[in-house]
Length: 283
Image: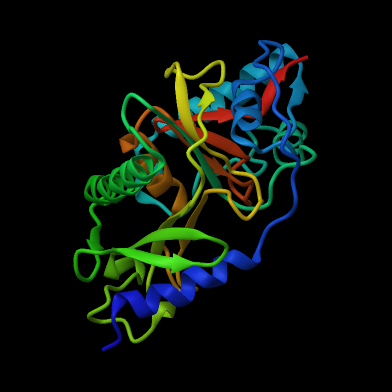
């Protein structure tokens, strides 16, 4: 049987091939923009754009998202949010949510680790990896899944100067198998966080987040030193990404954020402690 290190290493290296270039300028927090947009700018996702909606459309969008996330069925289905143009959402609003210009095409993560919690970049890296390891286990338990890994060192050398922590989420009824039954990574559902090796430089915490003071920033740009998040299900898997991502976000520290790219059944969003922030604002 191949080891988990070998199986996940193949998948981790494959994830480094995707992406598109972004700039590295920062913008100040503005109440005129959505919280999602402000967070994206702070986190380095500078290609993201808001969609301006009238009062009725804005209220409808927020109501639909709130209802979808409060629906327990979301966490027991592969259907995701189901917002791709249903009657309750309306085709015009659905088009505005899903066709907003400039959104990143792949999922990402960004973080601002306070120096009060890490005295060095190495400690910040360890805190990120330990937090993610615990969050994936808690998220899986919440959803009735198991987590599989081999040995005590889950880190794998990935391309472009990153260290990745990869874990296998197991649910055989969803065709997601552990390394003891999987013949290859093609039969696994792997969740991974790639943490870049960065210098000791600290920045002031960006406006609008709950932490203050100097932080070790981990941007989500497509630069080679960005942080990356991936959920890699096999092609036969029915495990839904959104519930897992929501739960991981919920169990991560308040200074960690997940960006989910738009898909057929969900608009682009940033998850903040499990809460969705959409790229929409009032016109």
